[in-house]
Image 1 (cartoon, one colour):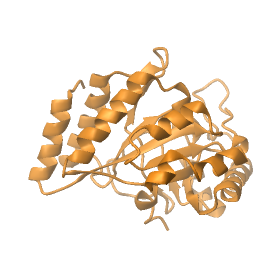
Image 2 (tube, rainbow, N blue to C red):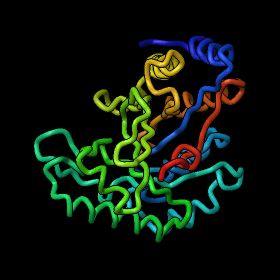
Image 3 (cartoon, helix red, strand yellow):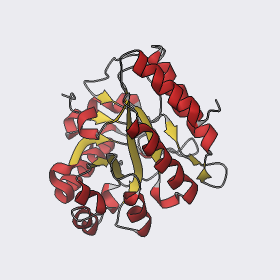
Image 4 (cartoon, one colour):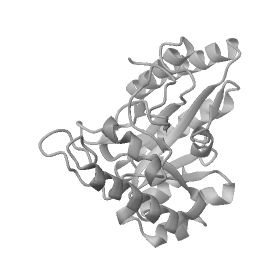
Amino acid sequence: MIAKWSDLLAELDGWQEAGDVATFWWRDDDATAPTAQLLRLMSIAPEIPLSLAVIPASAEQELAEWLATCPRSATGSDVAILQHGWRHVNHAGGRKKSEFPAERPSRAVEFDLAAGRARLIELFETRALPVLVPPWNRFDDSFLALLPLCGVTGISRVQSRSTDQRSAGIIESNIHVDLVAWTSGRRFVGEEPALGALVGHLRARRHDVTRTSEPTGILTHHLVQDEATDAFLEQLAAVSVAHPAARWLDAGEIFASAP
């Protein structure tokens, strides 16, 4: 689907006419250290809550220390830490990459999940939410029952869910708009395609085609983000924050109802 900014405004107007509010959230993956790219990301749309998916095994103490004084901390905007697997290592052989494919022994998966959770608590304390973001957004459903055993109560992947059903007592809130064109030079996917995915998911929610309670998720990767992506995010923030039928959620709100 291809869309323009006027289409997004029209869709938000539709939510307002229905007496409802369109919710969004922003997730950025692969954080490990306070890099120049991460600093640039933090400066974009500081009024919007940001969730950083941090790779536990590679995470540096300096990242935790820097977050306490980063620009977003000064504005009071929330920065949540999510668990980006354990080592971000592929265990899927020749198939699509996954750190947690079906063939991995459950004991190994449980060890990785628990180790990752413990490392993030050590570094970030209460800022580290019990939410798993599996690398490459793949996590075999057969392992969902292991998550609560490891102190994890939420998961975020890239897919739409058609119902509100939960798996193994885990609340799932996913991403629906990936701003990186991974097969085309890792550049910005483009304004019209990005808006098309955004408007398409909002419209599906408004018409009850997909799960209406799941906020529309935006995904970035600061390590490969270009200036065109920055400009898109700034414009998206300006349009959405100003609209009475749009609201950005922080991850704490989204996953608060997890058991």
